[in-house]
Length: 202
Image (cartoon, rainbow, N blue to C red; front, side, top):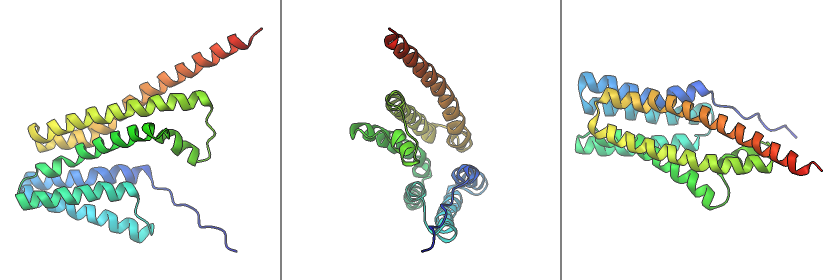
């Protein structure tokens, strides 16, 4: 009996550039050749990303299907209406869906962050599970607020400003948010541990 094939991990760099490159292509080409050319470039890369994962990894990640499916869908609408606004609304919709997924997991009493950690074989103490519930809820708020900003940017900002928000803006703001969340969770856990030691001391 042959051992199972090792799971191929996706490089964080490939995820980073995979999300940014369609936007960069759209921005550069749209600025030089117009909305139609920019949309075709973004759509071409989106389809190419799906084919690449299918050929190389033999399986397309669900996030890739969702992201590129929305990109292709909005891109086709934009080509039909000759209006790039539908393409620009794709990030806002993705972030709104992410917020709904996070909150939906709380309603189902299976917080997605805790579920993902346990799926990797990580044993979570009860205090950390409670902390991850709060983190799941607040992360949903973050994505919903950013979706509102992305919607405003799609209608009111220039293409370059919108692309910066979609790429660097979301990445940097999410990193800053996670740093503050990490500090908050650490202090909360330390406080609960200290309280438990006090109550257990005779």
